[in-house]
Length: 193
Ligand SMILES: Cc1cc2nc3c(=O)[nH]c(=O)nc-3n(C[C@H](O)[C@H](O)[C@H](O)COP(=O)(O)O)c2cc1C
Image 1 (tube, rainbow, N blue to C red):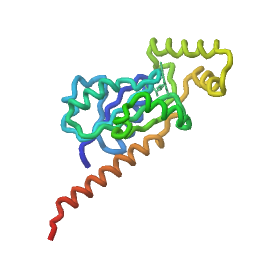
Image 2 (tube, rainbow, N blue to C red):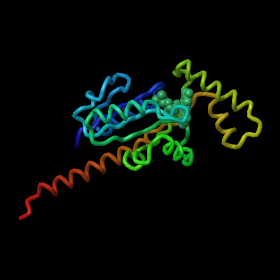
Image 3 (cartoon, protein in one colour):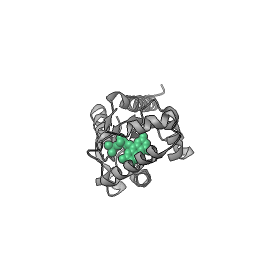
């Protein structure tokens, strides 16, 4: 198997936990995004998996990761994002991807959504304030849709909807794609006569 590293950016621990499970399952290296200074630390890896969180509709750290990946010389970037949305929020998740990835990236960067939850106990002060502002806005809203009411209920407290099963599509993608690469190498090296 080619060399793979999973780089995670995690604030309250959901993304870190998924990254650790992926590293354990696939026997790949793991690194904390906050400790990476430049792309040279990723040199020598063929595949970089970047894991981060959804943050106010954006992917935390993606801009910097794009630069690190380009400088690294790695061939392939995979992406996973954790968030407060359940995996059933398929339309919102699709919208999220198309708002954050370019058309080219949507085609060429395999991307996976993994539900996390909310952890007020480990949240930074700034993040707690942002969540409080969202709660106040929802409370003041006059005509609330069913989704608004669900969102208001969900953000009132910490919750954990993460599950090992959500990393499985990424792990399966990795093992299927490396099997294909290996098969292609074997075909190339096979003598013709
Ligand atoms: C200020 C703030 C904004 C957030 N925005 C979103 C969001 O737009 N979409 C979403 O699904 N989750 C959102 N979340 C939830 C986080 O993405 C979720 O808790 C994530 O799993 C945290 O990952 P971490 O524990 O690795 O830091 C937000 C959380 C905070 C604190």
